[in-house]
Length: 335
Image (cartoon, rainbow, N blue to C red; front, side, top):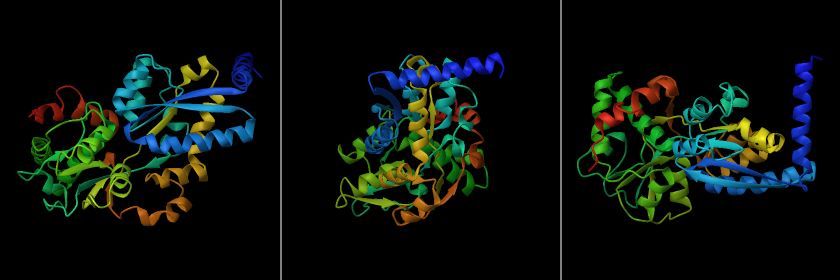
């Protein structure tokens, strides 16, 4: 064994043992995006029970929630999150590139490109669907008020935008100009841009603003099933985008705090049968085929396209659509 490998092994051993020796208790901070509150409330309790049984150590997981990009910025600016569970890979890439807190290859460290569950984008409307919303085209009709958050700060909003872009692009046979025009007309119908997905849901559900909410499938199912079946209806568009939220350990934080072992286990447990079932119960699409089959009835059948099909990778999508002077800045005119 080389001195370099031996040193790395001794360091890791010290990290693990120090974490286990702190009074039998360890605290993690999970910086997550807006709509995952209920998911991680359930998951954190399950993981704490699992970890206690495996190691005898008590683990407390604290949560920080907000728009995905705002959360990434907070970590970059010094929020000491042990793990991030964000809406899209670009936000985790930003933490790597701008703060060097984790390696560039972070996505290769867990299965499915570090995406333990998926989602998509669908619509929520008022009971009776008074505006007759059936598909993406209906969102650009005059007189239809659309609620969606700000793609500058919200990962969910970027998935919403790309769902609309992909629909228009495919309908026009790949014509970027037509897709840009569609996006322009869509955002003319948006009266307010909340900073995150949960804020947009609150605007639509609790404040009663808007005719249709574009949102994560899990957020729409939560709104329809848990917040008022007598008040809302779900609308499934003809096509939508496959959304892949991603997770990562924040290496420099866990090494500083001595929490690497428990933080890594925390993310790995998301892929376990229990972790996958918790995700499914909170309306996220599980990666596990067995769990997906068990919960298949609760997820709408919908044709999905991928980010790669309509915008390339996240670096290209960000530069084209969401960076300063990108397509969104070109088309969005605040009301």
